Length: 455
Ligand code: PLP
Image 1: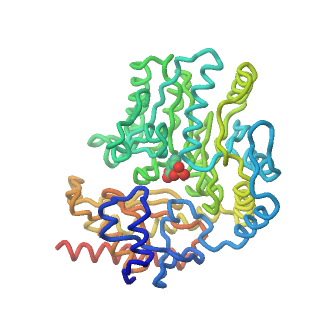
Image 2: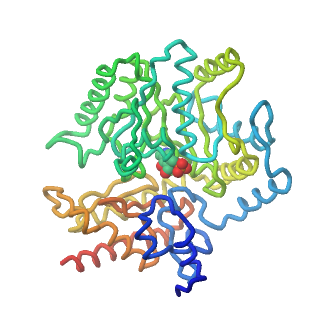
């Protein structure tokens, strides 16, 4: 697009401090300005159409033009645009949504607290780990264990729990009390010849040793994404969560499942917990909850945790937790309609069917000279680029090979996300077979082009 002083391009560079962006680079290259959306496509201000192969940030499960969601928001905006949930107040759709979530939740989760973002849900979960343990007379159980390469958000606590160094650099975090154990990535972390099972045993032992070293009386919870998303679509080795949960139970450490990406069908199961036999004490979800049509997240907790917290609020004369927009009626109405649509179109069956095509399609490139590993489950996948397939040595970071592949894809009308050495793919769950084939074929063409460019 043309750059005049009055263009959106120039005004964005002039006024907008972008999140998760190299700001000096942004001053030079400016934004991609997106104006519209249609199905799985987004359209920029110059009229270029792209398949949004990442559903935005893993979130627009129903694509970018769902009329029913827009109507649900409109109806609720006209009926009651705002109502808080503090101090015994509530709007009707919020009651309906909490009930609908408990009906769909993994077994044992019986109460729902609403917020506006994944980070807020995770932050709230961390605070409730502390609050719960104080309530049951174990106030020392405060340490929180996460994993290398996990992503849990950007608030001070959720970023501390995150295991990605680029989220810590420059901020002086993680805060004390946040520990990280190894990432369960067999391709990168397993020792030579180590089976998936032996790898899982070793990771569970590492977790147990960490808890014992710190003192079980000081460790409150373990947080895990069932499948790590932003860390590069890391599917854990078989048996991993079973072994991890045995350790947690032995030491009375809570299991918190961060389903902000995995929830609502993304893995080909309703919850990532279902895919891996996780029985969480708490669960966070967002993104697919409203298909991103409204910022809303949920934290679900088990009945024993609720009962302990409820007693404590009674003892303390209140509950010092809650956000102005937690339990927003418009968000609740949109999320409710989203859940209804998921039921009607059998989102899980659909994600499983399309996910099989996506995984099979991308695995065609496992032998491509640039590709070290193709991995994923359901409708989330990644290709990891390597300079040497045998030694698995990565390309020098400054070559930005995954970014070049994503640039080549963009020129072909497909948006995927390069993160480090990996190219991530998580299309809207409503994607049709032909559109999925376009994405998969474009990945092959982009890999070939970059291979030629590097030769
Ligand atoms: N947890 C996970 C697993 C996520 O992937 C994300 C965001 O990508 C978050 C938490 C934070 O969510 P939000 O960006 O809505 O704060």
